[in-house]
Length: 285
Image 1 (cartoon, rainbow, N blue to C red):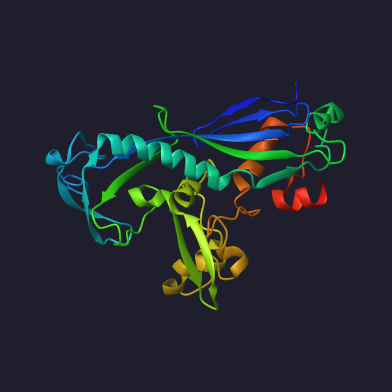
Image 2 (cartoon, rainbow, N blue to C red; image 1 turned 90 degrees about the vertical axis):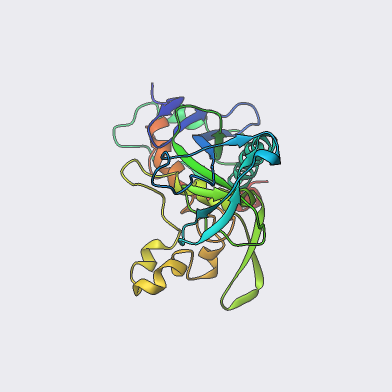
């Protein structure tokens, strides 16, 4: 057997579905996310638990407290109401999956060394006689799982206009909405991103690494320390608009988790490459 349906690993799980009828073959990364409703009273207290959580049923029982963001700023937050929390979890899953999905296509390359049954496996990636063999990439979140690959605290901001610098471990309630930014030299070009989708991207890590870096981290490392942070989000527009930059575009960099995993599902093919769905559909309508 050379095609494996499911792979489970500590960084994330994945499922490969062969093409069927007109439906393309699909590789789905499944990430179990433990979302935690952060208790602002104990959020950064040395006397509190590692991940203090609290839900209340009405505002009369809610408390305010200062929560530290990724820039060490102190932002006023309050306790989550139960109905707000359940609505947030639904919104989180919807917006993150929407941001990542329907963008990435993987194209198989040459037969792997000493591969057997290559032609049979290749045919499992054919869905359209007018298009080459290909695999669509997808991300699926489980926000109710106990076996978490990712643990993310979520604070509820009191002042929605106040900036909160999120990271892969701590976000806020407004991070499930589109935000806009610009890049120096392209001020008229608005860049859109759902912050939660970007932070989840950091969890799509290689097994040997703590996180998936920003899209331009390798370039940023060559700069003076005080210039690295901004440059890591993309020193050119084509990288700045990427999901692991400041935008919502999935590039070859964002496809790395899928490119790294597909070989464990289809081991008779090597030399996989990335193509954006828009370009694929333009060439093979």
